[in-house]
Image: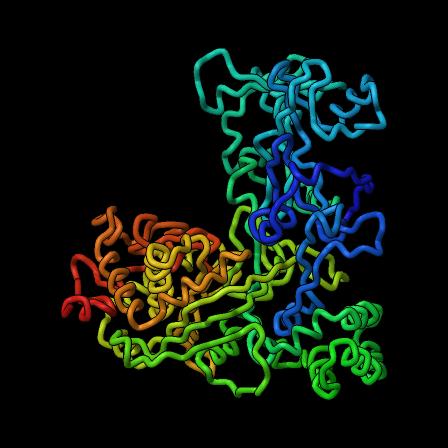
Length: 634
């Protein structure tokens, strides 16, 4: 059962001091994430709260990706508008609620601070909600609590300060007094640990934070409240929450779905239809219908909508009709619904990148590829190099998790998936999202050579088996069974090596580049053996042309060789190269921050399933790697 708390009125904040980039609302500062502003900490609210009092104004720019929309069962994706287009911006809620004064050391919920402020404020109407939290006595700026509690189901709440002070009080447990007032201070000793942080109640109860971060610290006297502050609701939850620092990375893991807009969805006609006013009006009308009623309504209006849209954008009405029929009527059939994993979803993208799809004879507006002559590269194991001069990627924030990273293998994990909180209500027809336009290099490796290498190297299989063993012991494996193959580890490691080297050659930082792995699991009808490295920046930096230039025959072979030579030795060797498991939950072998790891925004797998031993060999077996022979001959 979900309990909705009383709705609170909105307060407009300064758009200069309280703003983030559009891309950040889909990545680290998405729905349910805390944002540290200069004067306070806020949490991004659910998209249902983004609309202003004037509901006629849409708070987001509509972004369309037909393929991704069908998989996620939404009509569009919403990118927050610029403050000049939509003055209210996106909505935030105040969390955490507990603030303390660094001068008088009083520590209490924000609603009590606001009550004190309203009693003495000279101009109550001007700042009745205390936009900038201050102590009314000391005039000092208040500081938000540095620790909160979160559970593996995605809930989050303030640390139970009053309960902790009385339960853990020196001398034994005390009953909570009638009017508890807490002060937060450092102990008299010089200790800088948790035992030096003291909380004291006016009734005499006093304790420190020693042991607060233990996994079972709250088990005996506290359970999860099921609080979801981003949408002001609570639900039943019997999990034992963990105490975490407010800024810890495990407090918020976004679950993103990513899609390349490929032919035939990337042509100019599709783009014109998506951006037409009449098409968006059609989507608004469709929202009132469900199931068969929706199909019947669309069929009855299709001819009229076709003529109206064709007249607005001035293109052939039959082309408009075909696109509308494909977009609006149920092509969401068994074939579409069966696409649940990233691997299956990417089969179409792989075909587009390799050129194995029909050419539709339409103007490709968002996807321009140039196939290169592989014979000019003299790089073993590579079948094809394709330069993507123009590509559009759509990213959607479909959910988030806390304490444990979300499943990266499935593209459409529902809220019922372990620990995943959806960013929207079920009746809402859009997810927060944004689009990136950029360039990239696609490299297609030889499946035959990879399979031959695996078949004749039992140690390759053994190293992969070790990673699969480590994965089987993780909590994620219980909810998302997955078999990691030697081919996947090789492709993933190659992508990391090339990104690190390209950052030195093309002018982009590693954080501005992103990987996309195309590797089959053996269950699909098609073999995939490619990596796509492209610009991940959401602004004009992503279209400068520097990356594509590095893909030509006079550059790429040298870049590959430099990357492989650099992989032969890590500054942490021999510890790194001989590792039996390192990184998060021991899901890497020979891979650390000095040799392989990338910024988290660049890696699809949260920097796991990496092993440079499979690429260049190890100290004990230098012939193990796929490229060991090529390096020894050079």
